[in-house]
Image (cartoon, rainbow, N blue to C red; front, side):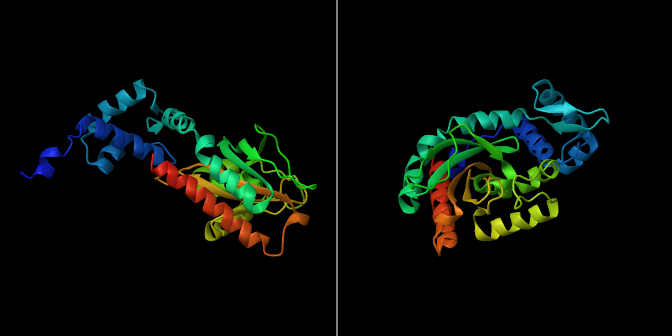
Length: 256
């Protein structure tokens, strides 16, 4: 036996199997039965059933009326608590200052709350004509730069939720799901989201998602400005800047 093998940590098989069930249910849009889970994960039905009972008792899984099982939001709440403990405002402070210096416009740090963004930090523009939102202010996920960036990063999960109830705030607001899907694809290709005055008339915003090592979006950085302030090369430049800043914050999170 090599030294590496001697030092290899032991993995508790019961815990590992339980987490595999939870991960499988979390990734499934529909409930799964004991038979399906046992076959998919290579477990016996009796073992699968016992693990499901434990996960149900602990609140991580629910037993549905059709006798299938699905994940609850408890794992999300645990993850959310971890995100809140990441001290995102402190971690992103230097990137906010960087974006403010480079653009001279209002810059934001935002997180998602259900289908809205919440601005948790900002640096105001000192220009006579500028964009403004209060810390603690909210906006719909689908029509501002920070929200659209987080939406694109997690669209498979949020698609069905966001697909109903989109209302128009300006004549540029996207309210059709097919058009939103096209916008999401454009965001993914560019690397940043672009709001062309979709929430407030003639107010533009650029956003890029801050992600955890697994790619999960935990927030976004954004630049917001009146359209008359946008320089000739502004879209590409501001887009590149916000992507650079968001990647820098994401790298800090990966190093934690």
